[in-house]
Image (cartoon, rainbow, N blue to C red; front, side, top):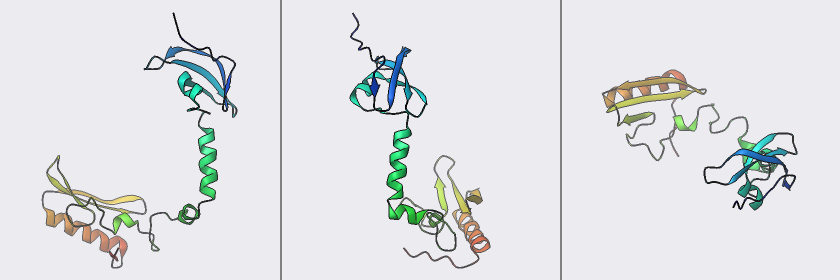
Amino acid sequence: MSKMIDLTHQKFGRLYVEGKADYTSSNGNARWYCVCDCGNHVVVDGYSLRRGITKSCGCLRREVARKEASCNPAFLASQGNPLKNEAGIAYSSIFKGKRNRTGVIGVSFDTQSQRFVARMMYHGKYVLNHVTSDFNEAVRLRKEAEEKYFKQPVNREQ
């Protein structure tokens, strides 16, 4: 005897249930074919529908996020040039992160290959991505790339 609750022709949030899907969730719950108010078709777990966990195809989340972002001054201020300084250089390229173990920005140690990696990103693209067994060579490569691309002393104060 099945305990399945028929959700056909019911509305949950923005979702209208058209019928039962041919398959169940991995946990055994029935799944339902639904159409959202925006017109998208989705298959949703019945438990999520009944409990109000799933209310739309995802359009509701996007609308709420867009509305909240438009009222957030910090978010609006970061648009156009996020995570970059006034010269357009990414902060991750000029400040040492908390996880940095070598003490040099842009130089890391790859435990898998047991080698040092020198990296630098400039205008969203890697201009340096070199692997070497020598730490000092990796540091030298990084410094040369900074001089070439940044063309000015990098202010590393935090």
